[in-house]
Image (cartoon, rainbow, N blue to C red; front, top):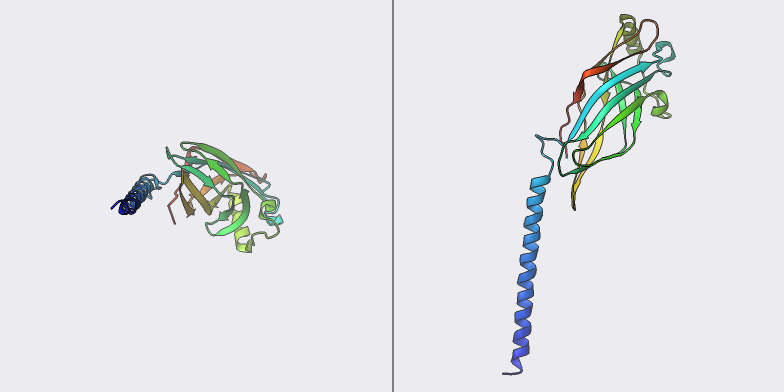
Length: 211
C-alpha cells in the first residue's frame, strides 16, 4: 500500500493542475471576450472625429496647370473615446474638383491620439507634395476652374484613406477608413488667385467603420 501512495498523490496533483489550468484558461478567455466586446469601436459611435475648420488658396493660376497653386486646409482630428488610444498611420490626401477630379496632393505624418484627445492638423496641398507623379488635370477641369475663378467662388472636396489602429492594453483593432467630407466653397479676391474661409461651424467629415 505504501508504494501506491506516491503514485496516487502524483495522479491527484496532475489532475488538480489540469483542472486549474483549464479553469484559468477559460477565465482568461471569458475576460478577453468581455473586454473585447466592451471596448471594441462601435459602428454607431466611431471614435474618430474629423472637422474641417478652414481652407485657403493662394496663387491659383490655370495657365500654369495649377503647379504653383497652394491650398492650406485646417482639419481637427479628435478621439472621443474615453478608453481607447488611437494611432493614425501616415497618409496621402487628395484635393478634388467636382468631387471626382484630383488636382493636388498633401502628405500627412502619422499621429497618436490618447483617449479624449485632439489635434489640429494643417494639410498643405501643392505640387511638391505629389512627388514625381502629378495628378493629370483634364482641359475641361481647368476650364471649369477658370470659370469659377471669374465668378469669384471655387469648390473643392478633400479625400482621405486612413489606416487607423485602436488600442487598450493588449487588445487592438485595425480599420481602413475612408471619410466622406462635404464640398468646400471658397470665395476668391478678384484678379488675385487668392482666397479663403474660416467656417463658423466646422464642416464634419462622416467616418464609417470598415474592417
